[in-house]
Image (tube, rainbow, N blue to C red; front, side, top):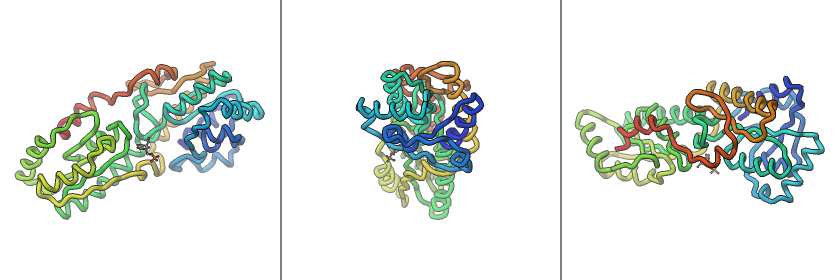
Length: 305
Ligand code: F6P
Protein backbone atom coordinates (compact mmCIF):
# COMPACT_ATOMS: atom_id res chain seq x y z
CA UNK A 1 0.00 0.00 0.00
CA UNK A 2 2.80 2.46 0.79
CA UNK A 3 4.31 2.46 -2.72
CA UNK A 4 0.77 3.13 -4.03
CA UNK A 5 0.34 6.08 -1.64
CA UNK A 6 3.69 7.57 -2.66
CA UNK A 7 3.19 7.02 -6.37
CA UNK A 8 -0.37 8.40 -6.42
CA UNK A 9 0.81 11.58 -4.68
CA UNK A 10 3.90 12.03 -6.88
CA UNK A 11 1.92 11.44 -10.06
CA UNK A 12 -0.98 13.70 -9.07
CA UNK A 13 1.53 16.54 -8.57
CA UNK A 14 2.55 16.10 -12.21
CA UNK A 15 -1.07 16.98 -13.06
CA UNK A 16 -0.72 20.16 -11.03
CA UNK A 17 -2.87 18.82 -8.20
CA UNK A 18 -2.16 19.23 -4.51
CA UNK A 19 -2.37 15.80 -2.83
CA UNK A 20 -3.57 15.19 0.73
CA UNK A 21 -3.39 12.07 2.90
CA UNK A 22 -6.34 10.78 4.91
CA UNK A 23 -5.09 9.01 8.04
CA UNK A 24 -6.99 5.98 9.40
CA UNK A 25 -9.20 5.45 6.35
CA UNK A 26 -12.93 6.13 6.57
CA UNK A 27 -12.61 7.05 10.24
CA UNK A 28 -10.09 9.73 9.28
CA UNK A 29 -12.50 11.15 6.69
CA UNK A 30 -15.19 11.48 9.37
CA UNK A 31 -12.83 12.95 11.96
CA UNK A 32 -11.05 15.25 9.50
CA UNK A 33 -7.62 13.64 9.91
CA UNK A 34 -6.59 14.97 6.51
CA UNK A 35 -3.12 16.41 5.97
CA UNK A 36 -1.08 17.75 3.09
CA UNK A 37 1.06 15.02 1.49
CA UNK A 38 4.40 16.61 2.25
CA UNK A 39 7.70 15.16 1.07
CA UNK A 40 8.47 14.50 4.73
CA UNK A 41 5.43 12.21 5.08
CA UNK A 42 6.10 10.46 1.81
CA UNK A 43 9.83 9.83 2.06
CA UNK A 44 11.18 6.54 3.34
CA UNK A 45 7.82 4.73 3.12
CA UNK A 46 8.26 2.68 -0.06
CA UNK A 47 9.83 -0.33 1.60
CA UNK A 48 7.51 -0.45 4.62
CA UNK A 49 4.86 -3.10 5.17
CA UNK A 50 1.29 -2.31 6.29
CA UNK A 51 0.22 1.25 5.62
CA UNK A 52 1.82 4.38 7.05
CA UNK A 53 -1.60 6.04 6.80
CA UNK A 54 -3.27 3.57 9.15
CA UNK A 55 -6.48 1.74 8.33
CA UNK A 56 -9.82 1.20 10.04
CA UNK A 57 -13.19 -0.39 9.51
CA UNK A 58 -15.83 2.29 10.17
CA UNK A 59 -19.48 1.37 10.65
CA UNK A 60 -20.27 5.08 11.13
CA UNK A 61 -19.66 5.69 7.42
CA UNK A 62 -22.95 3.84 6.73
CA UNK A 63 -24.70 6.73 8.48
CA UNK A 64 -25.46 9.78 6.28
CA UNK A 65 -24.81 12.22 9.11
CA UNK A 66 -21.17 11.05 9.34
CA UNK A 67 -20.75 11.07 5.58
CA UNK A 68 -21.95 14.70 5.63
CA UNK A 69 -19.33 15.42 8.26
CA UNK A 70 -16.68 13.78 6.05
CA UNK A 71 -17.83 15.84 3.06
CA UNK A 72 -17.51 19.08 5.06
CA UNK A 73 -13.90 18.18 5.92
CA UNK A 74 -13.13 17.67 2.23
CA UNK A 75 -14.77 20.97 1.30
CA UNK A 76 -12.74 22.83 3.94
CA UNK A 77 -9.57 21.54 2.28
CA UNK A 78 -10.97 22.01 -1.26
CA UNK A 79 -10.51 18.31 -2.00
CA UNK A 80 -12.51 17.28 -5.05
CA UNK A 81 -11.30 13.74 -5.87
CA UNK A 82 -10.41 10.64 -3.87
CA UNK A 83 -8.22 7.59 -4.39
CA UNK A 84 -9.04 4.65 -2.16
CA UNK A 85 -6.81 1.62 -1.64
CA UNK A 86 -8.67 -1.42 -0.33
CA UNK A 87 -11.33 -3.99 -1.09
CA UNK A 88 -14.93 -4.04 -2.28
CA UNK A 89 -16.18 -2.79 1.14
CA UNK A 90 -14.11 0.39 0.82
CA UNK A 91 -15.09 0.82 -2.83
CA UNK A 92 -18.81 0.49 -2.03
CA UNK A 93 -18.46 3.02 0.81
CA UNK A 94 -16.83 5.52 -1.54
CA UNK A 95 -19.46 4.81 -4.19
CA UNK A 96 -22.18 5.70 -1.69
CA UNK A 97 -20.23 8.88 -0.92
CA UNK A 98 -20.09 9.63 -4.65
CA UNK A 99 -23.90 9.23 -4.99
CA UNK A 100 -24.43 11.48 -1.95
CA UNK A 101 -22.09 14.34 -2.81
CA UNK A 102 -20.69 13.71 -6.32
CA UNK A 103 -17.07 13.34 -5.17
CA UNK A 104 -15.44 11.08 -7.79
CA UNK A 105 -13.07 8.35 -6.69
CA UNK A 106 -10.72 5.77 -8.17
CA UNK A 107 -10.17 2.45 -6.41
CA UNK A 108 -6.93 0.48 -6.15
CA UNK A 109 -7.53 -3.19 -5.29
CA UNK A 110 -5.54 -4.33 -2.26
CA UNK A 111 -6.11 -7.51 -0.28
CA UNK A 112 -3.92 -10.54 0.29
CA UNK A 113 -6.99 -12.73 -0.33
CA UNK A 114 -6.85 -11.82 -4.07
CA UNK A 115 -10.62 -12.18 -4.24
CA UNK A 116 -11.84 -8.92 -5.76
CA UNK A 117 -13.94 -9.68 -8.86
CA UNK A 118 -12.77 -8.20 -12.16
CA UNK A 119 -9.03 -8.22 -11.40
CA UNK A 120 -6.50 -11.04 -11.38
CA UNK A 121 -4.23 -9.14 -8.98
CA UNK A 122 -4.65 -7.18 -5.76
CA UNK A 123 -1.80 -5.35 -4.01
CA UNK A 124 -0.16 -7.29 -1.22
CA UNK A 125 -0.64 -10.75 -2.70
CA UNK A 126 2.91 -11.31 -3.93
CA UNK A 127 4.38 -10.10 -0.63
CA UNK A 128 2.08 -12.45 1.30
CA UNK A 129 2.97 -15.36 -1.00
CA UNK A 130 6.67 -14.76 -0.50
CA UNK A 131 6.16 -14.67 3.26
CA UNK A 132 4.32 -18.00 3.07
CA UNK A 133 6.99 -19.46 0.78
CA UNK A 134 9.74 -18.42 3.20
CA UNK A 135 7.81 -19.87 6.18
CA UNK A 136 7.07 -23.20 4.50
CA UNK A 137 10.69 -23.53 3.29
CA UNK A 138 11.78 -23.04 6.91
CA UNK A 139 9.23 -25.52 8.26
CA UNK A 140 10.48 -28.07 5.73
CA UNK A 141 13.82 -28.16 7.59
CA UNK A 142 12.15 -29.63 10.69
CA UNK A 143 9.81 -31.81 8.63
CA UNK A 144 12.71 -33.41 6.76
CA UNK A 145 15.06 -33.63 9.76
CA UNK A 146 12.46 -35.33 11.98
CA UNK A 147 10.52 -37.17 9.28
CA UNK A 148 7.28 -35.43 10.23
CA UNK A 149 4.07 -34.35 8.56
CA UNK A 150 3.41 -30.61 8.71
CA UNK A 151 0.17 -28.83 7.94
CA UNK A 152 0.41 -25.10 7.29
CA UNK A 153 -2.76 -23.00 7.40
CA UNK A 154 -2.82 -19.91 5.19
CA UNK A 155 -5.18 -16.92 5.27
CA UNK A 156 -7.48 -15.93 2.42
CA UNK A 157 -10.87 -15.86 4.12
CA UNK A 158 -13.17 -17.87 1.77
CA UNK A 159 -10.68 -17.89 -1.10
CA UNK A 160 -8.07 -20.61 -1.68
CA UNK A 161 -5.77 -18.54 -3.93
CA UNK A 162 -2.96 -18.09 -1.37
CA UNK A 163 -3.08 -21.77 -0.39
CA UNK A 164 -3.10 -23.07 -3.96
CA UNK A 165 -0.32 -20.81 -5.21
CA UNK A 166 1.91 -21.44 -2.21
CA UNK A 167 1.26 -25.20 -2.30
CA UNK A 168 2.54 -25.31 -5.87
CA UNK A 169 5.48 -23.02 -5.14
CA UNK A 170 6.63 -25.01 -2.10
CA UNK A 171 6.01 -28.45 -3.58
CA UNK A 172 3.43 -29.46 -0.94
CA UNK A 173 2.01 -32.96 -1.14
CA UNK A 174 -1.48 -31.94 -0.03
CA UNK A 175 -3.57 -28.81 -0.58
CA UNK A 176 -7.08 -28.32 0.77
CA UNK A 177 -9.05 -25.30 -0.47
CA UNK A 178 -12.75 -24.38 -0.64
CA UNK A 179 -12.67 -24.46 -4.46
CA UNK A 180 -11.74 -28.16 -4.82
CA UNK A 181 -13.73 -31.03 -3.30
CA UNK A 182 -11.22 -33.24 -1.47
CA UNK A 183 -11.29 -36.93 -0.71
CA UNK A 184 -9.16 -37.89 2.28
CA UNK A 185 -9.29 -41.63 1.47
CA UNK A 186 -7.77 -41.17 -1.95
CA UNK A 187 -5.21 -38.70 -0.53
CA UNK A 188 -4.26 -41.34 2.08
CA UNK A 189 -3.81 -43.98 -0.61
CA UNK A 190 -1.61 -41.64 -2.68
CA UNK A 191 0.54 -40.67 0.31
CA UNK A 192 0.95 -44.25 1.57
CA UNK A 193 2.25 -45.22 -1.84
CA UNK A 194 4.67 -42.27 -1.81
CA UNK A 195 5.91 -43.34 1.65
CA UNK A 196 6.49 -46.88 0.39
CA UNK A 197 8.50 -45.41 -2.45
CA UNK A 198 10.72 -43.55 0.00
CA UNK A 199 9.00 -40.28 0.93
CA UNK A 200 10.23 -39.34 4.42
CA UNK A 201 8.19 -36.24 5.26
CA UNK A 202 5.02 -34.48 4.18
CA UNK A 203 3.84 -30.92 3.74
CA UNK A 204 0.17 -29.99 3.55
CA UNK A 205 -1.20 -26.50 2.90
CA UNK A 206 -4.73 -25.76 3.98
CA UNK A 207 -6.76 -22.61 3.32
CA UNK A 208 -8.34 -21.12 6.44
CA UNK A 209 -11.68 -21.12 4.56
CA UNK A 210 -11.85 -24.93 4.78
CA UNK A 211 -11.59 -24.95 8.58
CA UNK A 212 -9.59 -28.18 8.15
CA UNK A 213 -6.24 -27.24 9.76
CA UNK A 214 -6.58 -29.20 13.00
CA UNK A 215 -8.49 -32.16 11.59
CA UNK A 216 -6.10 -32.60 8.64
CA UNK A 217 -3.16 -32.61 11.07
CA UNK A 218 -4.84 -35.20 13.33
CA UNK A 219 -5.81 -37.24 10.28
CA UNK A 220 -2.25 -37.20 8.89
CA UNK A 221 -0.97 -38.49 12.23
CA UNK A 222 -3.58 -41.25 12.49
CA UNK A 223 -4.02 -42.35 8.87
CA UNK A 224 -0.31 -42.24 8.00
CA UNK A 225 1.21 -43.06 11.39
CA UNK A 226 3.40 -39.95 11.34
CA UNK A 227 4.30 -37.39 13.94
CA UNK A 228 2.21 -34.44 12.70
CA UNK A 229 2.19 -30.73 13.56
CA UNK A 230 0.07 -27.75 12.60
CA UNK A 231 1.40 -24.21 11.95
CA UNK A 232 -1.19 -21.47 11.60
CA UNK A 233 0.72 -18.70 9.85
CA UNK A 234 -1.74 -15.93 10.77
CA UNK A 235 -0.90 -12.26 10.50
CA UNK A 236 2.75 -12.81 9.53
CA UNK A 237 1.26 -13.10 6.02
CA UNK A 238 0.03 -9.51 6.13
CA UNK A 239 3.37 -7.97 7.02
CA UNK A 240 6.84 -7.42 5.64
CA UNK A 241 8.51 -5.18 3.11
CA UNK A 242 6.63 -5.24 -0.23
CA UNK A 243 8.22 -7.35 -2.95
CA UNK A 244 9.51 -5.81 -6.19
CA UNK A 245 6.42 -7.11 -8.01
CA UNK A 246 4.07 -5.50 -5.48
CA UNK A 247 5.93 -2.19 -5.65
CA UNK A 248 5.75 -2.09 -9.44
CA UNK A 249 2.08 -3.11 -9.45
CA UNK A 250 1.39 -0.37 -6.90
CA UNK A 251 2.98 2.21 -9.21
CA UNK A 252 0.94 0.98 -12.18
CA UNK A 253 -2.38 0.94 -10.30
CA UNK A 254 -1.70 4.32 -8.66
CA UNK A 255 -0.78 6.01 -11.94
CA UNK A 256 -3.85 4.49 -13.60
CA UNK A 257 -6.02 5.77 -10.72
CA UNK A 258 -4.73 9.32 -11.20
CA UNK A 259 -5.27 9.04 -14.98
CA UNK A 260 -8.80 7.74 -14.40
CA UNK A 261 -9.68 10.83 -12.32
CA UNK A 262 -7.86 13.17 -14.71
CA UNK A 263 -9.90 11.84 -17.64
CA UNK A 264 -13.15 12.54 -15.83
CA UNK A 265 -14.06 9.01 -14.76
CA UNK A 266 -15.99 9.02 -11.51
CA UNK A 267 -16.13 5.61 -9.87
CA UNK A 268 -13.73 3.14 -11.45
CA UNK A 269 -11.64 0.40 -9.87
CA UNK A 270 -8.23 -0.31 -11.42
CA UNK A 271 -7.82 -3.85 -12.72
CA UNK A 272 -5.23 -6.24 -14.13
CA UNK A 273 -7.06 -8.88 -16.14
CA UNK A 274 -5.70 -11.53 -18.51
CA UNK A 275 -2.40 -9.67 -18.70
CA UNK A 276 -3.86 -6.21 -19.41
CA UNK A 277 -4.33 -3.16 -17.23
CA UNK A 278 -7.72 -1.50 -17.27
CA UNK A 279 -10.56 -0.47 -15.01
CA UNK A 280 -14.11 -1.49 -14.22
CA UNK A 281 -16.99 0.43 -12.71
CA UNK A 282 -17.75 -0.32 -9.10
CA UNK A 283 -21.06 -1.91 -10.17
CA UNK A 284 -19.26 -4.26 -12.56
CA UNK A 285 -17.04 -5.24 -9.62
CA UNK A 286 -19.73 -5.78 -7.00
CA UNK A 287 -22.21 -7.50 -9.37
CA UNK A 288 -19.71 -10.23 -10.20
CA UNK A 289 -18.64 -13.21 -8.18
CA UNK A 290 -14.96 -13.82 -7.80
CA UNK A 291 -13.55 -17.05 -9.28
CA UNK A 292 -10.01 -18.32 -8.94
CA UNK A 293 -8.26 -18.87 -12.30
CA UNK A 294 -9.43 -22.35 -13.46
CA UNK A 295 -5.91 -23.21 -14.69
CA UNK A 296 -4.57 -22.74 -11.14
CA UNK A 297 -7.34 -24.97 -9.79
CA UNK A 298 -6.50 -27.59 -12.39
CA UNK A 299 -2.82 -27.58 -11.41
CA UNK A 300 -3.77 -28.05 -7.76
CA UNK A 301 -6.22 -30.89 -8.29
CA UNK A 302 -3.40 -33.42 -8.31
CA UNK A 303 -2.53 -32.56 -4.68
CA UNK A 304 -6.11 -32.06 -3.50
CA UNK A 305 -7.31 -35.58 -4.26
O1 F6P B 1 -9.06 -10.14 4.28
C1 F6P B 1 -7.71 -10.21 4.64
C2 F6P B 1 -7.52 -11.10 5.84
O2 F6P B 1 -6.14 -11.13 6.14
C3 F6P B 1 -8.06 -12.52 5.68
O3 F6P B 1 -7.20 -13.35 4.92
C4 F6P B 1 -8.18 -12.93 7.12
O4 F6P B 1 -9.16 -13.93 7.27
C5 F6P B 1 -8.61 -11.65 7.78
O5 F6P B 1 -8.20 -10.58 6.95
C6 F6P B 1 -8.05 -11.45 9.15
O6 F6P B 1 -8.68 -10.34 9.68
P1 F6P B 1 -8.31 -9.75 11.12
O7 F6P B 1 -6.96 -9.09 10.99
O8 F6P B 1 -9.40 -8.78 11.39
O9 F6P B 1 -8.25 -10.92 12.05
